[in-house]
Amino acid sequence: MNILMILNGAPYGNETTFNALRLAMALQADEAKPGLTLFLMADAVFCAMPGQMTPQGYYNIERMLKSLIAKGAKVSACSSCVQARGIMELDLIEGVEMSTMPQLAAIVVQADKVMNF
Image (cartoon, rainbow, N blue to C red; front, side, top):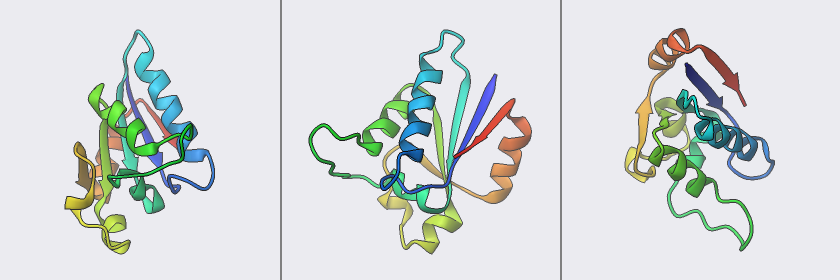
């Protein structure tokens, strides 16, 4: 099974993105181990910025993404959204790939389930 999660929200400020990543981690823990793709759009591209500093005991989106990538999740960032926010490809954490809307369309068609956050 292939699951696509499209994230649009900023990494901090509300817990939507945090909860999406919690769900992604739970999916990876499932014995069935579905193929998991995360596509970062709009302000969610900031999730892929390295060096996120959060208070002690507070969740850290960068660490969560790195954990997902290490366990096989594919993470892509919308290149138009990255450019619109002045973030360069070199500024993204290792393992996050730049992607385009046509590539997202292809992933949607191949996915068994699509979730939007």
